[in-house]
Each structure stands twice: as structure tokens, then as C-alpha cells.
Image 1 (spheres, rainbow, N blue to C red):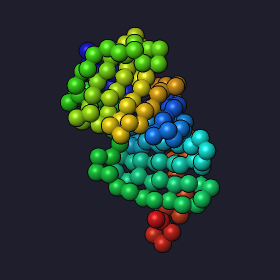
Image 2: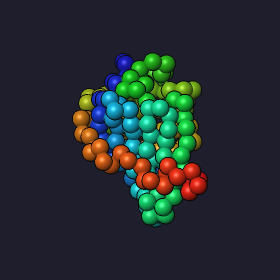
Image 3: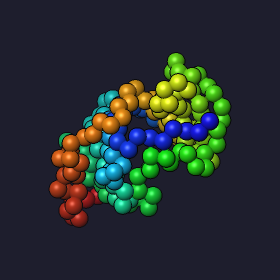
Image 4: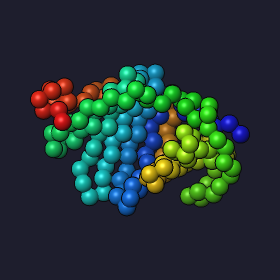
Length: 161
């Protein structure tokens, strides 16, 4: 089988376990507008905003702390068909009550689980052991434009970490 390309725009609610640190993530993917937004709600901490643009610029900010870190990743955001080429099909596995087709990408950087029946993403497992379960998946849902603006202090070189 071939992995299903992502819709060009969607919202997903993810449950993440990273070395025992639990969080939920609101993932907003908006490929036509060149942006991706992870709003990471930590179980016992603050909310981290991870705003990514197709030009490779990423802003990591905490509104409560008033902090921001800007980084550049040459890759930019993933295209909807990022998994289609150069992925390795592993087989079928049961995960979280779903029967999934499973692929590995980038020499095991990520293992991707997709529901056999609905073709929706179910689970992502990263080489670090970080695990993300897709709790809800809403194709076509778009975050309003105003929410995509990083705070002013992300653009102030003196205050930007």
C-alpha cells in the first residue's frame, strides 16, 4: 500500500508522551499558506507555542513567560505527500484499537501508523522514543489568520533568546 497524503489543511489533537512528560498538542497544518502550528499544553507546565513557516523560520514562545526563541530549519514544513516517497512499508499492526498500515521514514526517524480503513493518521513514533497518538483529525479545519502571529518580542533581537 501507499501512504495517504495529508489534506492541505487540517487540525489534529495529539496526545504526546516524551520520556514520561505528558502533553496534548493542537496541531494546525496549513500547507497552502506555508505554515504549521503546534500548541503544546504540558501536563504540569505552561503552554509552548511552536509556529513554523515554509521558509524554515520557527518561533518557540511561551506567552506566560514572555519568552521566545527563533530557529531556522532548512526543510521548512512538510508537504502533504512527505511520506509517499522514500518511506519503507513495515506491515500491518494493531495500535490503540486500530488496525494500521505502518511505514518508516528517514532511516527510522519516524514510524507512521495509518488506519487501514479510514486512511487517517493514528500514531507517530519518533527515534527518540517520543510517542504521539492522534486523538482527533479534522481535514479542512483552519485556524483563523490572527492566531498565526508570533508575539512582538519574537522580533526584538535583544529579547529573543
